[in-house]
Length: 210
Image (cartoon, rainbow, N blue to C red):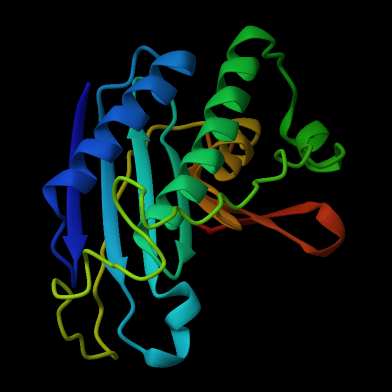
């Protein structure tokens, strides 16, 4: 398994790379031994008003199955990474449980079914002390590594496989990446479609007329 770590508006210290690789290898191996590679991205938000959530960590796990993703923000990267790891573990476990007990349902049954159960509470890890290995309340190893960033530009473009899938699979994948919507190629209708989360914990679906 390959772990790729990169920063946006920030350089990644070598000791942080060691922490990320060590922790992810153990967590991912526990639930998914077929993972091919993992992308870890660190992003610094330069807006001073966002200080409490200025450091964001995104983890994307690629394998032969659906992509599994988790992200979290905090005032420091170490805490944000720990939070993202907790989310990733929950989603990896959910995917593993689904592989063991997957059933077949129609699109109508999926949309009328009760919502998926919430993930376990993701506890915020305690702040490490000054004697900790990487980060303390008073020392931030990223402080001199951030870059200036001007807002108002498209800074990200993503694409993913257009392999046809059922609505059930699309809803499952939406939960695994932690989004409120998911674009997919509907296997039954053959149309580009979007499932999305509505109020009151139910779902909706949008389809394009071809």
